[in-house]
Length: 124
Image 1 (spheres, rainbow, N blue to C red):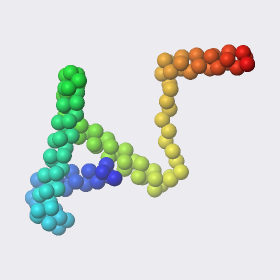
Image 2 (image 1 turned 180 degrees about the vertical axis):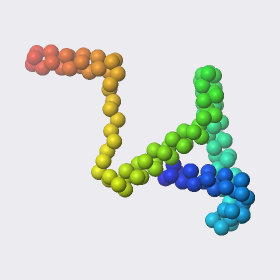
Image 3 (image 1 turned 90 degrees about the horizontal axis):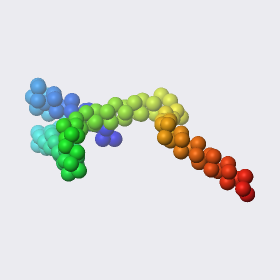
Image 4 (image 1 turned 90 degrees about the vertical axis):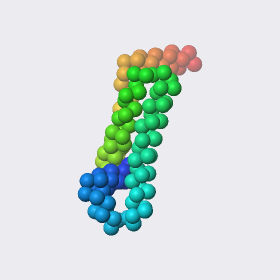
């Protein structure tokens, strides 16, 4: 649900910054609007901060700049959520499955397991 609402909150934030709070005051009373916009900004700042701290604590310093792209990850969540909602409405019984196990290492493991089970079944 958050992924569906997040773009609307960002749009309202941008409208309030560009046009002024009066443009979105009809949706929220003044104190609620200020608190919601503050929450949006601080929440996203904390999200970026925790992503950066997580990689820095592991000493993966090369990944620190990528933590700044955390809000872009929210955009991808929203795109996926709207796509899923559209598919739920237009084609409710469709299931997009991801193909797993396509790497050569996985294929080798599967082949060795099959070979092992084939020899094991012959021994019985």
